[in-house]
Image (tube, rainbow, N blue to C red; front, side, top):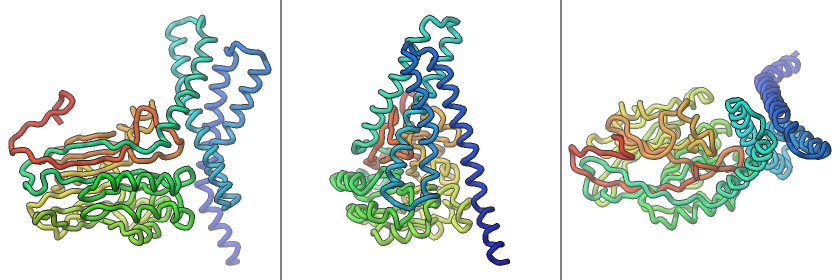
Amino acid sequence: MGRQGNQSSSEGARSPLSSFLSRAFIIITMAHVYVGWSLIPDIPAAFSVKGICIVILLVSILLIPSRLLIRRYTEDPILTDRVAWASSLTMGWFSSLFVLTLIRDTVLLVAGSHIWAADSALVAILVSFVVTLIGFINARRLARVVHVSIPLVNLPHALDGFTIVQITDVHVGPTIKEGYVRRIVERVNQLDADMIAITGDVVDGRVEHLHLDTAPLADLKSRHGSFIVTGNHEYYSGADEWITEFQKLGLRTLLNDHVVIEHQDVELVIAGVNDFGASNIHESHDSDPVAALQGSPARMLKVLLAHQPRSAHAAEAAGFDLQLSGHTHGGQFWPWNHFVRIQQPFTAGLNQLGNLWIYTSRGTGYWGPPKRFGAPSEITLIKLAAIPAGTTLYRDDHRV
């Protein structure tokens, strides 16, 4: 009786994922059918070539969801990583092919002519491969250092020029390993920062699978140490275990709390909140900027690490001066960078909300497809700059 009850419970726990995978497979199949129906008849090639194109699309249908399915059948890390590589690359390529097909069909429909149908079909296919290749190179190379100066009214003289290196959204997992992480750490250490801020989504997988790949984070060096907050992917990957692992690596984990650091005889507050949606997975992990400041000294510079930009409204109300966030990847690759605003108030770069500055990094790694196009990865070197009270600030020809 007990065994039957456990089996029913297990089946009930699996059913939401199975339902999701079923719906996803139907959507993926329909998208491939649309692309094949639109492009293959117009390709100026022999029937055998068109047959190869059909086979490629059929393989793509199977590969894209394979990353989610493989762990149901094996825990072999080598096999699961190889499947994840094939799945991710295929997903990145087909995403571009699907969008380009939509654009092509829209242009042909508006133009009311199919004179260019054959040429445009070839162009869509060729461009999808070129964009995927360029995106792959951009994703796999070391993130560039982006220099950002943040103006703060009445900043103490001792903090004028204070530097923070921000890394975020590394997504250590099937395609990002120890070597990739070590290159990031070496570049960060060259910047000789006053402190390091890690704003979540460090990992995509369990501690037992990835602890060797995250180990280089223990070598991060700065004057006041490294501080980290959780992102949504930590909660998908076992947040409690990762919080313990981060602490073993010497990273100060800020869970709705703060520390006060002293720099040249001046103190400042560094606070952090749990991921914006953490309580949906971990009930005791509400994201609470007010709690993060509880007991902090008044009239000090207050910096908040918050994975998602949409923490900004609560952070501004709580009295923070600066929020550092990630999560968006800047959209990661075109055209998804234009859709981030549907979920997040800020996509990338420096913005202002009331008295709060928000810097949103495009991320230091990538998620899913190893592809960045139009949204380069970054290691961010932030420098605090003092400005007189009453100064009106403008950026990109509009007030921020």
